[in-house]
Image (cartoon, each protein chain N blue to C red):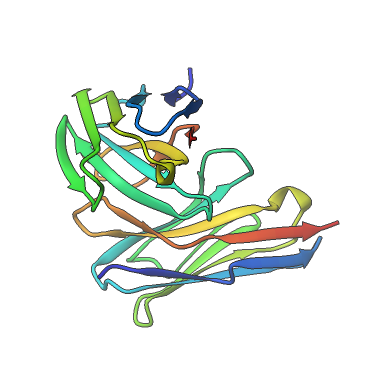
Length: 112
Length: 114
């Protein structure tokens, strides 16, 4: 069945360092890959996304890469700041269904 | 002028009761969703409606019944509440007509069943 694996489940980095979160999806029909940030007690908020016809996308300190052959996509955060601390979710949307399969989340802690 | 809103924000109730959660979006989207986030933070889709038509119905107990009176509203009614129903329920919306996939989430409803 459809599945998205996300690693690591927790990640601690020093302020200013980079953080990388990786996801693997199972359905080759997936064509849209969003990343959500969820702060404690808040709603998930879209921070960046990528479509299957693009290999990389960058928005300031955040970038996402996609390897369709390997069915991998990753979130890269550079120059991390304490306010980047949150739970990050990857997701894959199945073509034509508008249904997201979410990863299990990564709790990122940025240590000041 | 919150884009996706839910009521109530918190809901504490006893086992066996029936309760409803309401969701409204003012983004002009045509598709709405209900997600359940459990204590381990797993986000799992439950239902989705497109223009009042049910398009996604995951394996959810039939004690859960969604209703969409119009494309701006999606409600969730839960009968005979059980302890395992305790979770945060998120509503979300997107625009299928626009051909975009972005989903916007509401603030969540924290349901506690005692």
